[in-house]
Length: 359
Image (cartoon, rainbow, N blue to C red; front, side, top):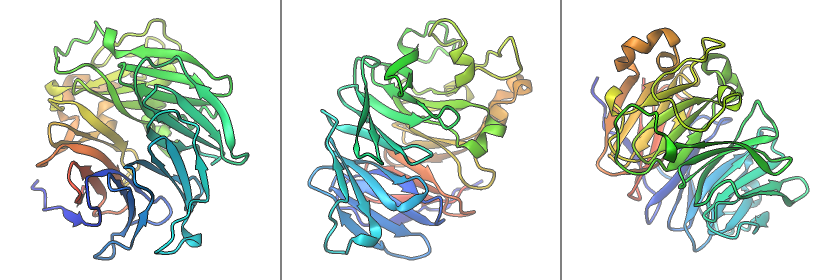
């Protein structure tokens, strides 16, 4: 299957850093950049709809307020700003709120399913939990990471828990109501991984959690993008009941059920040969059917999650990879939208955002 030339979205003056797609309005895509701007695109139209001048520092992460996509959160430096689209004008983008709780540069900001909390992960290794309604700091999660905390996600089926990944090669599960961790997976001490893949340290660059309407088919998993080129699919519930912290490698099954604990997507099954920078579950077609990963090897890989997670498919794992896209630049971030076409948005290390059609 040949890949058509991507559509190109122009609006940034320097490298695009992040992208998100609307759940409520298919075709609406927002991108952020090192130019301190956020660009709004409607894929039904040719040009950028409008450009928000957020600040002088790069905008590292974006998220909508869950259930109200008129509210946008953007992180720049150690600050998180919120904006109401309807209260702003083309010439004036005054923030509704500004949160300055992080001591260091924020790498990712996310909103939980009930739109009651924000979580922000920063370079100090801390994660701040912000109470949106009370407009105050709720908890600080620290001492889980010894280096940069690169990624954070709320766990939708565990409403008081988040999962974080960092450049200490650790994946940490937290109870943020108590402010403490209760499970740490250390990929750096992963002596059981039998892939033989050794490129860079197993830093955690990105994590993705399926939405609740994906869980029935995917189970309660987490996708992990690692610096050694591996993408892990980890069953969170199995990990929580398991002793120890190191990985068992490619596809060991739970002794108590047929659920797969871990699937290791490495070069032996067509995976990346450099650091993986981003992972996301697909919103198009059957939601969650595909896991999309992008890396420093200038490729985007589309994985068939149903095949990866099928315990009867262990001997036929060569067909885990559904499709491969070769790029000319490294991937910074990617996201998907719900359309049948133009459903994969990729920010690479240029200022031009690319949009691909995956079927």
